[in-house]
Amino acid sequence: GGIITQTPKFLIGQEGQKLTLKCQQNFNHDTMYWYRQDSGKGLRLIYYSITENDLQKGDLSEGYDASREKKSSFSLTVTSAQKNEMAVFLCASSMTANSDYTFGSGTRLLVI
Amino acid sequence: GDQVKQSPSALSLQEGTNSALRCNFSIATTTVQWFLQNPRGSLMNLFYLVPGTKENGRLKSTFNSKESYSTLHIRDAQLEDSGTYFCAADNTGNYKYVFGAGTRLKVIA
Image (cartoon, rainbow over all chains, first blue to last red; front, top):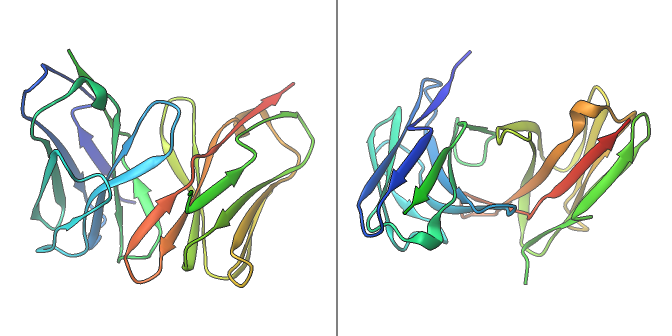
């Protein structure tokens, strides 16, 4: 079996700071995703990458950058952390676009 | 409006009883996924569906693409079934899954 790992589990940053969240998967999946989940709410798509050299904006991409460094890793950068974006950031991967997802355990962001 | 609408938003079930969760779509959808998020926050994939029905243990899920809805039936609810259930629909042609707001389920003894 494979695993999808998000680091760090908890991230504390100052307002205005640039912060990077990392995601690694060893399923050899083509497609990777970053979602944001605000407390008690559903998931909203920030960025996704269909294949190794692809990068696509989701509905919530403003204020974020992403990088698919290689097939197994997908990073998300918060360009200037704001207090209203304290949330859990979830990474997922799937064999191809439109196949079933496996999620990581999340990175909880706190902005002070 | 909501592209993926889940109902009910919250539910309390007696252990051993049955229930159904529903997801209605206002977008063209080819496949549906159901997830359970446990109280610690981990998301587990329950079903990946094309139109039709799948069953796994006490869980059964149906996706009706013509009428744009999906259901998740829980039979003989157990305490460990507690958590938040999310459905997600792929926005056909966009390679993006849109998530509903979730159904918070609490199973009580």
